[in-house]
Image 1 (tube, each protein chain N blue to C red):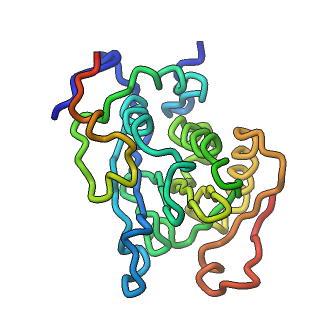
Image 2: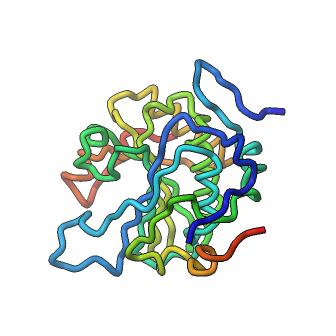
Length: 188
Length: 54
């Protein structure tokens, strides 16, 4: 089952970073299982062509099952609070109605892998979370205390998506300590 | 025009340019391994895996 060469094999377009898609399957979760134990790497890519080869064949968020989390993180960074690179970070989040996040997700991925963010080095990756009534897309960053970097990333993300509503940045450490009363550290 | 710029030595690609490459990449990545919940993620994996794309 080997796929033949395709497109223009002589000239792949290398990316600045290698990235890994991860999937957290809700059907693999059980009450006994520790959080994060059902998350698996799907594919690592380092060229534009390799990205599209996976993306063009995989379900987009609107077709994923409720409860699914689909991540695209820089290679070697695990999409978990416990990852040493993520541990001091946080996330910007955009919420869409159910079935409405496909374009937001794709444009977020293209901005990340195409290195469109001025503070791209501060980005760990992005995740889309499919839930019953909404789909949430978040960009995870490395160092929540670096306010200038977080504000820049949040503002540029909204520009790339032409998104007009305000969005908030949550610090992972704050999220770990409390479920309710969680406040945005930054808003743009 | 805006294919790739190497600002500060970084490989940068605009969204418009990235989108132009999408139609060329219909097969699964070379070396892609089947994963345990492939059926949840891929609408028609069997067809894509074994059909030769002309």
